[in-house]
Image (tube, rainbow, N blue to C red):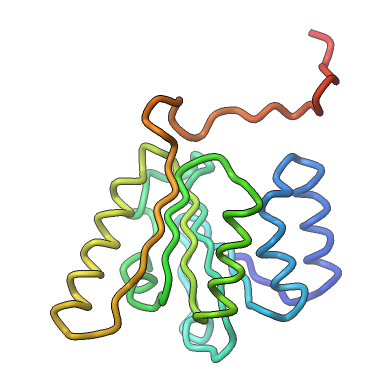
Length: 175
């Protein structure tokens, strides 16, 4: 689990992400930097401490399931617990865009608890099934519904992830 509220550390992470071509993730870090949300990056196999889940502060938990280090929801021991905790879920199984991450930041400000799942096309169905189970559970209990936004690659495009072009437009490495 990775989490910090240190402004310098957050700024350094944002700069590193931007340099590596992952600046599209920075809206959730800007929300953390502004104090609008607590941001927790969850790696496969890691557990979430109870105190993180039951804070009063708006919180975004990012389940990092698209780096090729896991095989889906089953590699996240707290996956079911996180679905129960969440007020909004985003299953993100496509290339990143800043607008997607801005939606998560806005949802945290508005609804408090957001589970943002970064996943691969191959793992998407497992997360969807877990969300479906939580939707059914809440309906049976008469609990607040769980809105789930699924962002996926259109069927006519290659599966996610694809290897990003790390060279700015017009600049190519000599090969």
